[in-house]
Length: 428
Image (cartoon, rainbow, N blue to C red; front, side):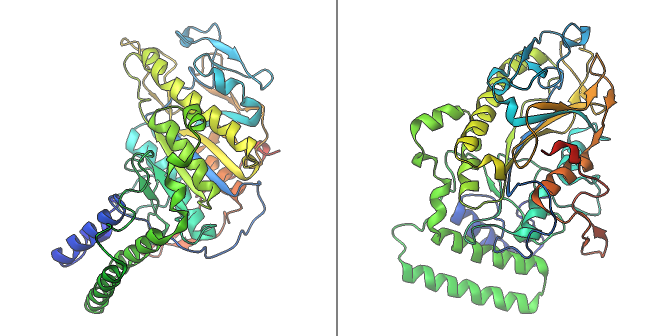
């Protein structure tokens, strides 16, 4: 879904262009989620999670080389196993810092999916529903915004850092539940303040003019999409006025903390995620690509894994030290695994049959592995977890109503995780 979709379907090109340019000029992004107070309170008992920091490894992270190593197996290749703070749990040698913090997390080694292509896999992971041409489903952050809203009325409840197509989205829900997209976390929200040459009275006159244009157009073309575009602008202005814009400014962090997360965009994105949840943003997704290792798998992991290792381990330690880990569910997820068989290009191909994810905080029991694959990492032997089950587990940790139906524009009923059921054994 294009983030500027409300403009693409408007009836008058001039107005569409005006609104699109206004949004970009205000915040330096291609579109803006609409945010505001929640519509319902927490409705079910679950874990202790209030927030989610969702780390998405785009491309299909190899389970055999990260969270499900098989010492001595021919399928293991050039990855060694190292011990961790979770008794009896081994992980790949490229994640030494995470190993020291695995007492805070549970590794799920029995993930499986029905989708083996990237677009479909990304979509299924984020929504729990199959990609269809007739409907777009909400991702978890949008469901959270829909049911519980944010903790800070002047900030969006849902933010995505470095996202791609078919990651976080509002789907058929109102556009105010879509994520606020951030490209470069070190630049935060660009152009979030009016130019010094534009005084407050000029801004007010422009807003009055736009409001009149919006009202006139809406009377002639009543539409949910048109209304959403107008609301988007209003919420952008509200965000510009917020004192909590400082949450997006990494320059306010101690330099030692910034260095601890790593200089890469992903590490700085994890730091930004921590700052945002501190300021009442409920769901932040941070994306790290580069895991599609069909060629030279081990060389690629030599570059990717240290970025993940430094950022994730620092995030877990930082949240724990600030007393935020118990209320913040940290999710490490990917759309599928990679083949145990090493191909002729010294790479691994797509493998939906078995892969690994990780959960920490938010009431999750730490220091263990859940589920198991066979000695080659090829087949699940114990406690399979489907994508809908994984999403239901996150939703249950947040106290979202798993059975409550929300209807799409076409009148079809949907729930947060479809037919998924939470894996309650993961909780302390």
